[in-house]
Length: 156
Image (cartoon, rainbow, N blue to C red; front, side):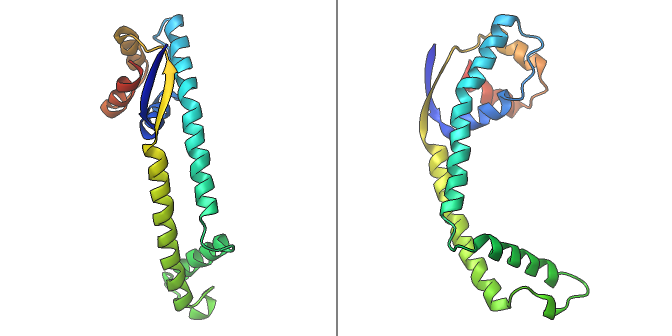
């Protein structure tokens, strides 16, 4: 087993590629290795997703945030209609403007928090693939050069 320290965002990229990989050209032992690599990356990806969702929920600037967001979206749809009718607006322009400012501040805070999660260093443990096995894995999949580079840096 090899322990690798890497940023969460790198684990996420690798997991995204490997979790949908096809193993058809690999021998059985390498298929198991790839499956185990995916299993070792999955908890990091799931924790990132859970932490991100938790941050988005807990950092909402007001209790009725979701309702206000829906009203703001409806406001935007209404003002862009060709048969615009100001009496059908779910909120006034001032209320909409205030919500937009609060929403921008909320998004900035959430993005900073998620970026912090993504840059956190984690340790994952697995048996790396040989170059030959990685070549067979590439031959089994229709990956871009970016996907190959992302995965190759981590699992080989």
